Length: 482
Length: 98
Ligand SMILES: Cc1cc2nc3c(=O)[nH]c(=O)nc-3n(C[C@H](O)[C@H](O)[C@H](O)COP(=O)(O)OP(=O)(O)OC[C@H]3O[C@@H](n4cnc5c(N)ncnc54)[C@H](O)[C@@H]3O)c2cc1C
Image (cartoon, rainbow over all chains, first blue to last red; front, side, top):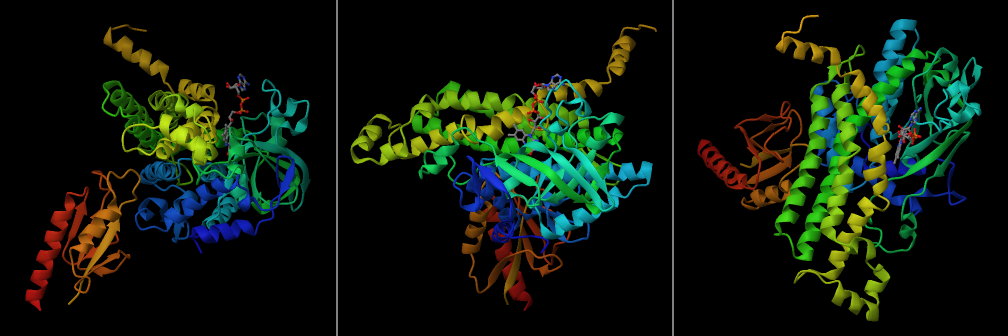
């Protein structure tokens, strides 16, 4: 069953016994939680789309064993694969208007795949063999895997081993003949409640004294010792009110959580890095690079939805022909396509790693993500500009459907002739959802911090800027001799 | 004799028209007992293959798709006319062969 249907995916998640908490209570059935269900629907969409002939060219790939697999579990074998990844992410963003949660794991797969190869090359370890077997399992069962890099990090000015609380970064607390025991937490974990497995990686460069923190492994999400505490999203409890209009996006969403590892056992065959501190940098840089590329796809797809909503708002407001509105829509498209151009560019310039898989061009991927930290905010501002104040003042669906109040709302919130007031409010709510509500978590703040805060990209851009070469060029033109 | 048309879609990342609607229009121009449309399967031999590409980059992968009488790539609803004409010509020429 290398490709699961959406229904099979739901069934497989139902079988897991995850330890999930939200609002102080244990969640027995995340599938039936109105807060979590939209995020499950988003992941399910990645399975559904792979079954459709109209999308299979992008949604599927050929796996390590030659079988047809979901592209979200693929190890990139060419630049074309890297490009198809970005295209797939744009498609999924368009179809959900939300975070579909499978990218972090996907990026982790490719980063761990090549890094383990190079660790084995140097130390004669067997991490790559472990990881290849793991990927065969993931591909064969079409698993969704949470990519877990970010630690709590405590005092940001101190390295992992210098933190007052040793658990501020996830680390090995016991080494046994059959494996290791780990303790700590991974924060802001996207899609964990909808994942079969969690793939853990270190979060930063490490020094020799950080040996116990240089650990990478994968375990099932319902492993003993794992506790998941769901994070709040802006406007999340609207989903509990039973209104579909007020949520803005009644079908899809994302989710993030704090994932605590309280003495979790990891068997040897699930360990992919264990103390080789100098390889933490390679793993972090490669993962971040892939994830910075990802945003040139997924955020663009969500941007497509927001641009469409803004254009509809203009239609419904009766001003689609106003020159400044047209110009603002052009600017939104320009910004969005610039992000896409960066995603495609860093893929097209990708190169082969020693392990044989393909890595994006790190400079261009960092430029991509640096733009992602800004452009979605500009696009959101323009969408709110076009939509007008109703985005933040529209009455509730209950009022709209009330016999007496509804008449006022219909009368005073009507737009262009022939436009249903309800449709106008629906679009306003969608814009609210994407720019201020639950989806803004993914579209805005995640664009800023996800895959690393802006400064992290600037450091990488600086490192790869080849400034001396640029100076030589200038000198050559004006005949300056050293 | 029934003509079998293979239908291949590109991945659909950034389509500029509804490809399934276009296919429906093409299908409706023919008698289903004479012309059959089906999603392509690798290594099958089709009489003709329609490739529904969502944009001008025409990236649908047809490397493992076989056709006796050719392929037609459609990149917009404007391609409906050409597709229908080609299938009509093919059906006439095949009848003559029989
Ligand atoms: C919605 C969302 C989803 C996410 N999903 C995932 C996921 O699925 N998996 C995952 O592993 N991670 C995920 N992340 C985490 C993301 O990678 C981090 O948010 C990011 O790396 C920043 O870390 P932080 O949030 O701890 O902020 P901080 O690191 O505290 O950064 C805050 C500010 O402090 C600055 N700063 C931090 N340290 C230093 C220092 N030493 N010196 C100077 N300045 C410093 C930063 O540049 C930034 O400006 C997600 C984040 C978000 C918002």
